[in-house]
Length: 242
Image 1 (cartoon, helix red, strand yellow):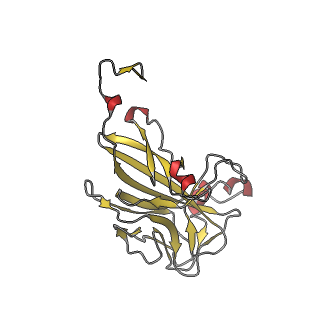
Image 2 (cartoon, one colour):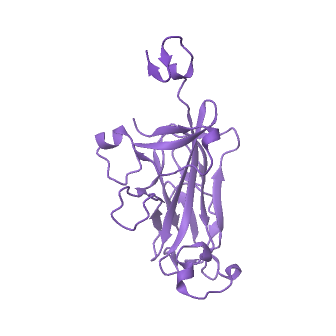
Image 3 (cartoon, one colour):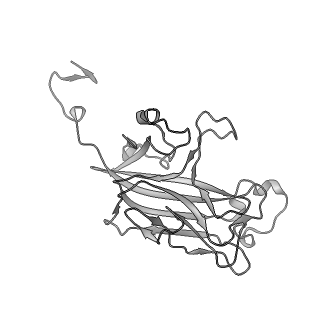
């Protein structure tokens, strides 16, 4: 069954699509770990008849020096431990979908949740991101550390435009790779995206760490119309079979 989709009609979409997806019937059958990103029922927007759009958003917490981080789709349960619904570990792009965009965002230091609990700080315009590393090191969202920049059938990587400056600070900004309108890329393999950095790794000046946000967008075909979509005399009455 792999990934399945819960269709949202345009008139019912009044906020961002939820990236958090509950397990579907195959999850238990395949004995997945609680945080596994596979075999889940994903919320999808029917933006035009025949096509569904899926937008997944995740975070990576930068703390002590490291060169790669999982992209975590956070649980709606915000308590720190023993969550009824576990965080999803991994930003999954399934096989046989039409890939549209992948990207990451490095936010200003004062946008992070731990900022204002640490006393008086400098003006926001002078703070930077709070993420530090080796000068010249790049940070990307990718399917592997060696993936070439671009959207590929079995490989994904952002452009690498976020680079640690000469003073060792990672700038605020975005790094995105996106298909031309009407020309998405058909995937031929499942891919789980992570955040990767060059050099000896990234860390942070903020107690509790700084977050990098990741996003991926892809399209799937809407299921074909069925009996519920037509009027058949005697076959249906107020939603019940005759």
